[in-house]
Image (cartoon, rainbow, N blue to C red):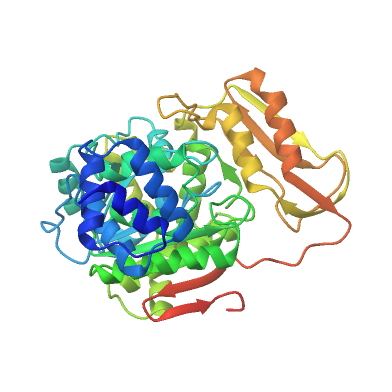
Length: 443
Ligand code: URA
């Protein structure tokens, strides 16, 4: 079999056989297929697409390109969660303990943030003492005894995706539904859970800018999951503005704790409840309404928060930080940004807020860059708010005074003020499962 013929076949719009996909993935992972041929194939896939069977084959070949995680020593239906990433998305930190507090195990591997979105691992590491570099044996132990653990991916999980993703990043081939879907799902499948809940973000701060594209991606991922025997549900959720008010690592952990205390802003609280309830449905805990009720109960009775304390302690972190936020590193520089004109906030550039937070030190450009755990922004106004000149728009936190000017400018540019209030936007845009797409905009 020749890579040349595989590239030509896809260039001409034909479907690749499982053997051809295997030849490509195995050869690229072991270095026998060079970058220039892999780039040509990635571009051919970008332009010509892949059908559902090809996408599932590509996913499975990548999933088994390295180690896979065996979770069979943990009893029960293990449910994983993945978000396609957004600004202020701290849902994992609240959803994982909520679901685990109801007896559904959530052993989870997460990634770091690059660019304007923070990663769950970076957020968790802002809890004093907490480690995400935990070996496999201890990870399984914690998942068994506590019911949840959130750790870093091992280096050898899905090496084919690692290589291909880095190549796509520099060949303008990231934004392809079959390539994104197979990349995400290969990691979820290798991580071993029985069922997968996907949070596909949609809007100005997300990969997918429109509802239609987000649904297309969700359908591709649900089809892969179902094809390989992992029940998968996707929620399409709004990312046209940051989620909640906090953006930045420790600030987001505190807001996630607020979700578990029932004191968080409504958008982040409702998103966490809906995600957790859908995970419970996947764990066969009953119909969605009943699962929502269970989740709300765990917030009201404090058991979700207690589970987070337990997980933090098991991973070496300070469990008291969950209650006493002064135990987090405190940013030495705090700066208020106030409105220079009046009006309604009619739109927000979520990505712009993420960039401002990264400028303050909360994000990184290269994977080896250090981040400032205390840096970030607490927003004071979101879409629909009526602001008067002089009102607070947001508070900036940083250790680097020099970053304030740029971050303030970026935050100001992220706000669009107008004379009339905007139409309210729904948090939930659609739900996709094996049965099809449900429109949630009017639900
Ligand atoms: N996230 C991934 O893991 N892979 C992609 O291709 C895009 C987003």
